[in-house]
Amino acid sequence: MFSENNIQVIEQAPNWPAAVKQASQPLIASGAITTQYIDNMIASVKQNGPYMVLADYFALMHARPGIGVNQMGMSLLVSRKPVDLAGKPVKIFLIMAAMDNTSHLKSLQKIMSVFMDEKAYQTVLAGHKQEIITLFKSMGVTQ
Image (tube, rainbow, N blue to C red):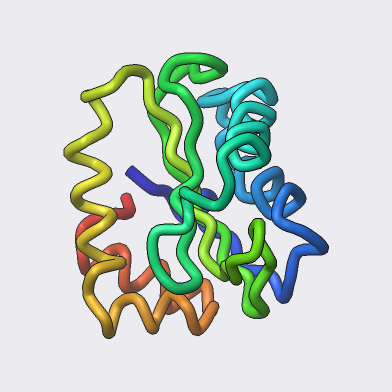
């Protein structure tokens, strides 16, 4: 699901669209998504508000499956300082690119198990890349 290259940690993004763009860069680099997918994620928040913020400091960023997606992929950006996403503070930007409405669900369930574990969640929030990689490997979400 994840490679180490798909995990980034920064001090702080200037704004949430910049965070989404930076979080998406590993997927752009691998050819998994196009810039259209990034534009669609940003447009969706602008149109619908911060519905992608699922928990304190956590946003599951996505757009319509298949449009601008060449292959399923996920990437993670952790900002040590929160970024305002339409009134909600976010530190974790998880980008999910899906080909259709169902093929990504098993991978999503596995990665969400990390974020639903309080200790694991706090490890990710702390924003230390090597600790996040070690955690993801131990939970079976990185290769």
